[in-house]
Length: 164
Length: 171
Image (cartoon, rainbow over all chains, first blue to last red):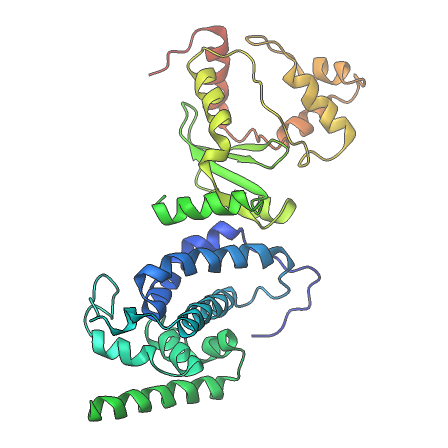
């Protein structure tokens, strides 16, 4: 896409972003942090987005921008859990409601154990159906790096699966 | 609106992040878009399948922080409902005039708003009252371009005239 050099970015009404992307962002967050924490992460994601929205300088990939914010909120949740390791992690997973998680709970659990960047890359590719350019935009890395993160994540899961 | 969206509208509002709140409402003259800023009601428009375009216009001219927040427009909806039921003859709502550009335009609209319930006035009457009796055409243009939009068509106009003269029957 050629970069337009128009003065002032034309931003669509924020409600349009909600209408178009709230469903997939919630599914991404539910897959990433589980359905309970996803509710709060969802609210935080869109509040952050709304706060920053009028100052946004590039409106060419709003979807990737939203996933980038959601990715950071998911990281916050994961870090919060790491700081206070509570026995919840040890409880047997009750797979309810989250698509993907419902069908293959073990698989999604394996994805959740991946390093941050790989985990998000895998989720963005397969839970949110973003292409590699969009994943790169969301993760602040190049398209090849995005592809590499997905590949490495899948390799790790496959290994764990085989040994599992 | 589902619970998640209602919660979001509530939190966004509590944080002061909603610059333009809107809702849609049904009326005897068709579906209407109602929009308000912190200052007051900023736009009432006949929707006529162009909601997206109306919202884009608000985003461009006011702020991109446009959010569906029906609770913000409860008072407006109530007064409109009362008006359409024939129970209200005057509106008592704070207005945001920021979509009305030009001093003369604003005077025209203010004068028009002062035409008593059930009465009519010609463009010439309004132009004269606004201080320039020769600006008949300008008055017409100002009213055509007013942010409340007179895109309602003749049917809506007829209905409103009948309503205020007591002839309309609301189904």
